[in-house]
Length: 138
Image (cartoon, rainbow, N blue to C red; front, side, top):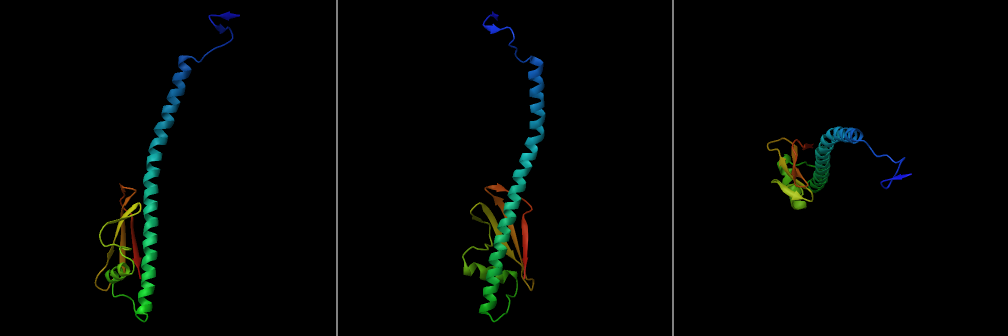
C-alpha cells in the first residue's frame, strides 16, 4: 500500500548509519593521505637516483674515451674527468646546477689526486629534493 508516494516496505538509512560511514571514511583518509604524500617524496628521490645512474654512465663512457685517446692513462682527478666529459657533450656533467628534462643537478669533481666525482640532484619536476647524492670513483 502506498503512503505519501512511498511503498510501506521501503526504508532509508538512519542518521546514525550515515554518521558511522562518514567516521570510517574519515579514519581511512587520515591514514591514507600521509602515506600517499610520503610516496611522492620517495618517488622523486628514486627518480633522482636514476638521473645519478645516467650521469655515472656518461662519466664511465667519457673515462673510456679519455683512456683510448691517452694510451690507457686516466685523468689526474675527478675535476679533469668532469671537464673532459663536458668537452665531449656540452653540459653532460655540469659544474653548476643545470636543468635537464625533469631534473636539476650538478657535478663536482675532486681536485688533487682524488679520482672522485660527486653528482647532486637538487630538484625533480620542479620540487626540491634533499639527500640525493651519488659518487663516481674511477
